[in-house]
Amino acid sequence: MNPRLALGIGILLVLVGLLWTLQGLDIVGGSSMSGVAIWAVIGPFVALVGVIVALGARRKR
Image (cartoon, rainbow, N blue to C red; front, side):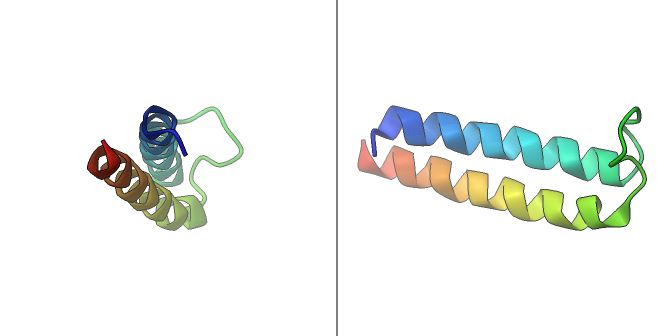
């Protein structure tokens, strides 16, 4: 995979994971995900996968 593409996907996963965590904690409202605890659990895992993908992309450069 292209390292730039992998870096972009990693950053996107981190941002989505952060958003899901904040929605699960009911800090960001306006969604059916807001206040649902499972998203506060899934979000950090998605963000962690994003960090791993981004670091892997940096390592390939």
